Image (cartoon, rainbow, N blue to C red; front, side, top):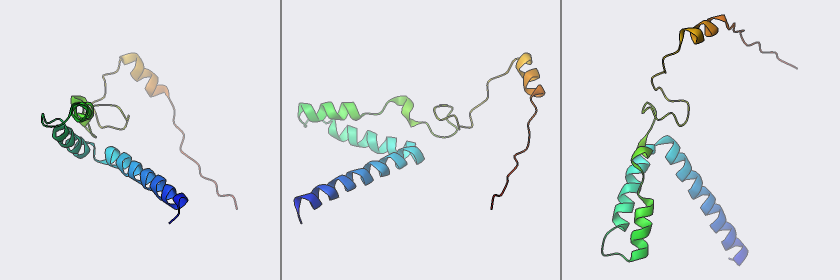
Amino acid sequence: MTMYGFVQDAIISLVVLLSVLYVLRKLMPKWVRGRQLAFATMLNQPSHSFLVRKLGSFMTPDDSSGGGCGSGCSSCSSCGSEPVAQDKSEKKLDAKVETKPLEFQRHI
């Protein structure tokens, strides 16, 4: 195996790993947070060196980062959180807005 092939495989492996981590964080945020907390706690042991403990404290997730759908975090604007009460004037504006159905056209 040439050096070029090794570098290419390393870069592709890194891209795939980062993609998997991104998908896991998006689809299973609570599970990823638990694994991250367990790994950070393992690194934060007093028997480890100063730099490893510093990395462990850096990797410890925040208390607010465990939200998923329905948690009310409103970070993705697609959660089922409780809607904020509207004023009567806003309700009147919403009633006046007229919606049109979508029309699909096939171009052959």
